[in-house]
Image (cartoon, rainbow, N blue to C red; front, side):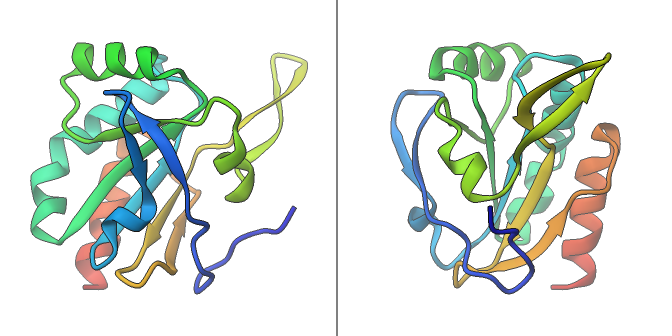
Length: 156
């Protein structure tokens, strides 16, 4: 599996969103896109991370940045997550984890002595031309939004 790095062309994708509508990365050409991969909707860490992004969306909007969250959940689970947490951005269902694999975030994980395949929490900032500008992989769920916002503000 190829590891994506800064400067690489971001793999394009089309997935169903929380409203069961098709959304493609190509739809956002000309804008920066924060594509963040998370393991599972409505879990504690994923909720904290999503709510942090929800609360900084207006600041990201001002910087011309679109937020897209991707997980292996179904569109129905994403609808419930969006409604319960009042999320104000797009969530996409990657049930077959093909996009997770294309971005290199579908990996063997160890948890409580068990090994299984799952999403390694990672975010990609994709520039207006569709190239990877920055990869965020060292953060805590509670300060993910701050790390992203700080990077974008310092590099705009």
